Length: 185
Ligand SMILES: Nc1ncnc2c1ncn2[C@@H]1O[C@H](COP(=O)(O)OP(=O)(O)OP(=O)(O)O)[C@@H](O)[C@H]1O
Image 1 (cartoon, rainbow, N blue to C red):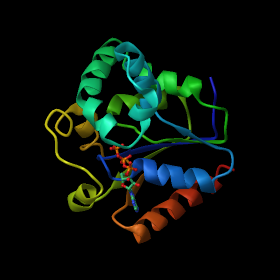
Image 2 (cartoon, protein in one colour):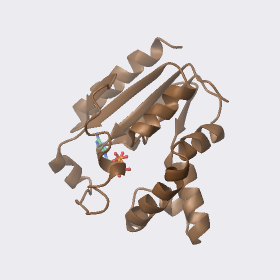
Image 3 (cartoon, helix red, strand yellow):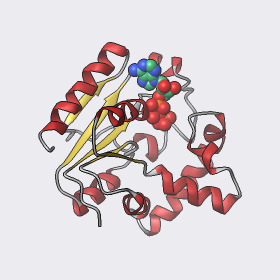
């Protein structure tokens, strides 16, 4: 199995900016890989349901349309094997010094990484509900009130807690992660 020097596990509520921050970090860090647990999940879901995988991966209405059903379907897979999608995403990832896992959503995701890797940094990104709404978030039953969105709300062992309500906070958050990453290069 690929073993990076350090793995950042990013979590946050919908539209807190997980992808946005990870993508910015990816442009600033050499020898870095973006890992999305949702990658193999959406691929499998798209194959099983004859859907467009590229559109499911994008940040738009197509993904939102299928989100609730995809959560239910993936929960059925996880009930058999909680690490299924984490393992698939890591197996598909390239060998790099740094991995940025953009979409940690459950305690079982963190447990799976802790069991299989060392030098993990759990990162929680926060943004106010009003800011998230301005980014397109609409509270939706079956999405915002289920495990995939809420399981880590009561997790307190974050190595790093960041805010992303505006550009200034975002830049500060990025600098914080870059500083930690430097220690492993
Ligand atoms: N600091 C920021 N400045 C400007 N735009 C931002 C910022 N952070 C996030 N955004 C924008 O907000 C939207 C949502 O961000 P993003 O997709 O990164 O959220 P997410 O936490 O990954 O959401 P989801 O859980 O729904 O995938 C995107 O259009 C993104 O470009």
